[in-house]
Every structure is written in C-alpha cells, then in structure tokens.
Length: 380
Ligand SMILES: *Cc1c(COP(=O)(O)O)cnc(C)c1O
Image 1 (tube, rainbow, N blue to C red):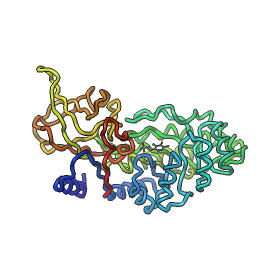
Image 2: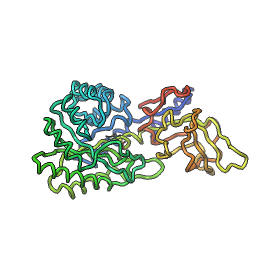
Image 3: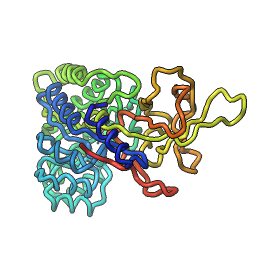
Image 4: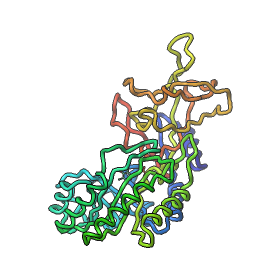
C-alpha cells in the first residue's frame, strides 16, 4: 500500500465518490518492478503479459520504459500498438489462434508467434509467411498457486517435429517457450524445462536447424498473504540452470511477467455489506463484501489466491469468517473451505482494503452480471 494510493482513497471518500468497489493502480510500483526485473535478469528482454492488466496508462508506461509485450489476441496487439510501440516488440503468444487473426497480426507487423502443434504451424506458414515461431512445451506447474494445466504446450519430444515442420514451410524455427505456472513460489522450477529446452536445441542442431531463443514465460509471484522470494533469487536460479544445461552457449532469453509486474501495484477498496450468522451456534460469521468473483476477484476460484485484506480495526481480536461477494450466485464465495481471520469489531458499512490486486482483476470482471458494474479502476 503506497501513500499515493491511500491519499487517493481518502480524497474519494471525502468527495462522496466511494459508492462501489474501486481499484487503484500506482504506476510508480510498476516502474520499480520493471527495474527489478531488468536488474535481476540483465541479459533477458521483458515481454509484459498484457492480459494481467491492459490499462492504457500501464501499457504506455511499460512501452516508455522499453518493455516488449506478449499478447494473446488482435485486440491486445492493437492496445499495445496504440502506445506507439513498434510491432517488432510484440509477440503473439497464444498457441490457439484463428487463421484470420494471424493474418491480421501479420498485417499489423507482428512477426513472432507461439505454436504447440503442426496444425498451428501450417496456419502461420499460410497467413504470416517467413515469421519466427517458438514452440511451447508442457510444464507440470508444480509449486504454482495458479497452475496453467495442460491447455498449452506439447511434450518436448513433439516440439522437435513441430519446429522442423516450421523450418520446412519457410518459417524461422526460433526457439522454445514454457510457463512454470502462475504465482510460482519456487525459483528452481525453471530448471526442468530448461533441461528439456537444451535437449531440443541439440536435437534440432543435429538436423541442421539452429534455434536462437528460450522464452522463460511468466510465473514470477507477487506477495499475497505469504511471503515470496525476491525476483533476484529467480534471476540467480534461472542463470544457474542456463549455465548448467547450455554451457557457454546460452541462448537469447525473454521473460513474460504479468502478475509479478503489476500485482503489487494495485489495491481495491471495498465495503462490508452484511455480517451475519447462519445459526445461533455457528462458529463462523459470514462477511459479505460489495466485491466478489464476478466484479474483480475471479482468482479466488478454488480459494487459490488469498489476498491480504486490511481493515481500520486491524490489531483487535480476530475470528474466523467466511467471506462472500454480493451477487445472487452461490459460487460467489471467496473464502470458506479455509475461513479468513477478520477483526471481531468489523462492522457493516466499514471499508476494507484488498491488497495485491493489480493483476487479473479488472479484465476478469463480468459486465453487469446481476446489475453489478465492472470494477471501477484508476491508474495514478
Ligand atoms: C498469462 C501468461 C503469462 C503471465 O503469467 P504470470 O504468471 O502472470 O507472470 C506469461 N506468458 C503467457 C504465455 C501467458 O499466457
């Protein structure tokens, strides 16, 4: 929580504009995070994962700082290009693309694409001839709080064939990518994927195809309730693994931080709508907020992300509570399996501050589900 954010909320309350939940993102924090990535991984280019927070002011700042961008759709590409950033700093990193979207990206100047299958390679060869492609390999996501499952990537054995096919069709077989799972709390988790990547580099070199790049993906964590290692520890661990598996021939590397770039830059102010019990002898109180799964806190799904919640009465005696959102959908419960400790003296109408909400909040808001508007957002 920065002084600037605190002052913003104070002013908003003073002017009576505090009618619904509101996210404030502090650009100074993002500037510091960008600096920390650049310092921890000095030979690595940063491709900010736009989906984490595509607010124009966030993209403008990162473009000015020299960041590149990882995008997943034509709209995201257009949002990035609107900053004045040139298309050679943009990758189309989604492995699942319509051929007409590939063609549109190519028209816009994009020449770097992700693939994880021969069928996708063929689309790119037709719609974006001569482009660079990198193949995403599967990663099990162990140790991540928000795993990315098996939706993207192929097994390393298949990647060799996919990239060979790209080469045959006149594309540039450029490299390998992987994602170790979002909110990855273990800096050593890049090692296994780097080992597989080096093996693919060697296999293809034997066939006369020389890859250039490893895309190390995202996964860099932000601090929620539990502490996380500093980005410096990730830089050191990744560098050690690159040395171990690639020796003196370390390839070009890029990272795609999303959460780690913007997560800690945002704070949501929300309001307690109701505090109640379901029966007289209930041990646990229900606390209903004016924000829930459908207007910003989708990542509480399966209680995976546990946000720090601050109140004006922190320090008072605490008790376990179920925390729920305001909509009439019964899945709109944030924390129940593992109840959340809140002060006994918390009252209806009180404001709470939900920290670490700069990533994966605004764009996960439903549009008017149950009449609740998308999350009000300000970038300062
Ligand atoms: C979502 C995503 C990212 C960002 O992941 P974080 O864990 O938020 O850093 C990076 N790369 C790709 C391909 C993604 O889909």
